[in-house]
Structures are given as C-alpha cells and as structure tokens.
Length: 271
Image (cartoon, rainbow, N blue to C red; front, side):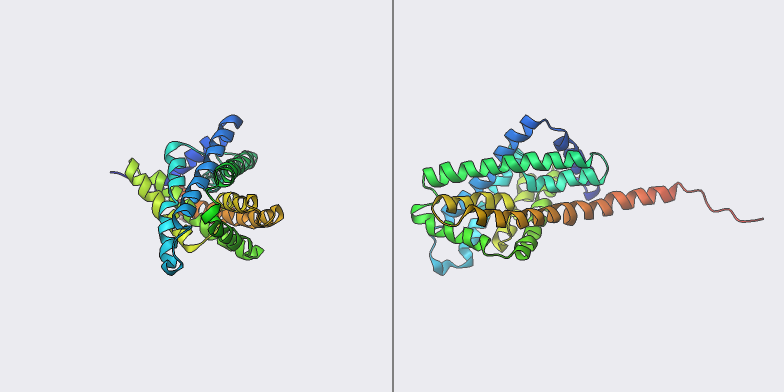
C-alpha cells in the first residue's frame, strides 16, 4: 500500500506538527530561511518561464508558469524546510488535538514567518535585483504580477489567501499521505499548480515578488505591508480552518465521540 488513509494522515500530520512545534530556534531559523528561499526560487522560475511569453498565449502562459512553480514546495517537503503556510495546517492540527500549547504554536509561527521573509528577501534582492533575473526583459512581468497582488482590497486579499492555503494545506496533507517519493511529488504538484493558475495569494510568494518589484524601483514597503497582512490572515484561515479543523472534526473529534459511545454502559430500566 503506497499511501495512508485520511484517518492515518491525521495522526501523521499531528505528529509532524508536534515535531515542528518542538524544534529549537536555530533549526526553525535555518529551515525557515530555506523554505522562504525555495518558494521564491519557484516563483523566480515562474517569472523566467512566462515573463517574455507572447500576450496571445493568454492563460496558457499562466498554466505553463503554474506547472513549474511547485518545485519550491517539493524542495521544502522532500529536501527539508519550514514554510509558514504549511505549518498553519500541521502545527494547528497538533494544537487542535491538544498535543501542543497555544504558546508553542505562536512561537513556531513567529520564528518561521521571520525566517521565510529573510529567505524571500534574499532571493528577491540577490537573484532578482543584483543578478537581474526579475528585471531587464522580465521587469514588466515582475511589476505587473506584484501590482496585481497589491491592488486587491483588504478583504479580497484575505479571501484569496484562504483559497491559496486551502490548496497548499491539502498539498502538504497529500505529501504526508504518500509513502514513496514520486507519490509525494504528485500530491504536492497538482494542488499548488491549481492555486497559482487560479491566482490566489500566498504570503511567502508575495514576500518575494513584491520586494522584487520594490528593489526595481516600483511600489513601496507600505504597499508590501498592506498586502501581506490580509494575505497572512487569509492563509492562516485556509490552512488552520479549511484543512486542519475540518479534518480534525471529521477524523479525530468524531472518532473520539464514537469510541466514547461504544464504551458507555447500556441504559438500565426500572424493574
């Protein structure tokens, strides 16, 4: 059998969440930097693939770009890395199951978020701006992509963030479900490709593309901040509620309730 059942994946994910919450600060910082960098490198690949595609290609170009973007999450989940959007699902599930404290959850979120930001800024500045991979012939696409993220009002960006991390959360879930290397890649690839093709907003990806445009002389850090706040909150809801909470209620809470009912003594009636 090459995969775990959804009930088994719930337990696997809880165990992963406990491990993540218990990781020391240095480990989270190093792996968080890698997580932010890998997602950014995936987005850089997207820009390089679609940046000079003819306008006549329309959504076909977007689909091609979306097809290569998942390499970032593959590197994180199979090579090693901490990504805040994935942790919003896994660590939250461990908290729902009362395996970790709320303080541990907040600590993990805070450290990984900062480390992801550093990794994303590193790729945006050194590879995007210094080397020039998001500029030159690709600058128009970089600015247009960042601008499309920034222009969304607060609640639009928030809801878009929910949709994004619903997909990313289930991609992580499917990766945990597969037992072999190729199965994990397939489980990651399609949901991530879907969210990119649709255009949902991912906070770590935005930590790369918006600063890349800023380093090139467009937009401001206030534009960046006003985008990442609603997207971060939306991503949290998408991963923690639409994946973790729903599966917790389906496979842990209901299972515990069923087991409790099985062990109840039969009702006694008066003689």
